[in-house]
Amino acid sequence: MRLQYGEDGWDFIDEHKNNDALDALETLLKSKEFQHKKKVIQRAGDLYFKNEKSKGVSNKKPQLYFALAIAAALVLFFGILFKDSGLTSTEVYSNNSNWDELPSLVSRGETNAVLLSKGEDAFTNKDYPLAEARFSAYVDTNKEVSITALLYLGVSQLELENYTSALENFQKIIDSNTLDHSKGYWYKALVYFKKGDKENAIKTLEIIATNPEYYKHSKAKEILEALQ
Image (cartoon, rainbow, N blue to C red; front, side, top):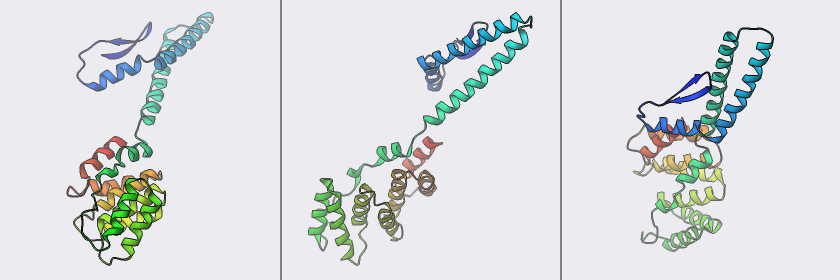
């Protein structure tokens, strides 16, 4: 199927449909919104040709100019449409803020395990102010870096829109020199997406995408491709 402009306007020419993109384009072009725009352009064209004919002007050049004008209008229409159809920062955040992926803390058997347990309970109940207080107390009273505790603390702060503190704690994970340090990049990207800082979010995802061993490597590449 291809789109061709003829004497009666824009029509579909059936050809072999070899991919889903053509099907999507056909659906779009047959939509009520597009058909309405088509009729508006056609009415304007009919009026234009009528005026030119009354002046005794040959309709060959006006028809060519009109066809070019429609083509330009379509380019603008589709350019705006496809630009607007891209993923937004809010959509990326909503699609990837799955806190069920965070590991459980209850059975870790660490010092101050009560703080971790109470913090996790508060987090599960979405009592993020209490969760932040519990995990912050745990992090402050333990010299050894706990990646999981920092994750819970940072996500609690993210939910509270305390972006600066969340970024600081995720940066601590990156600087921890542990096997899980790359998780910090993923959660920093989520912070940037939630606060609408798409530029820094993309830069952070690019770090993940260029390192195959990093946490959420495939997902980062997928999001970057969708944002293009």
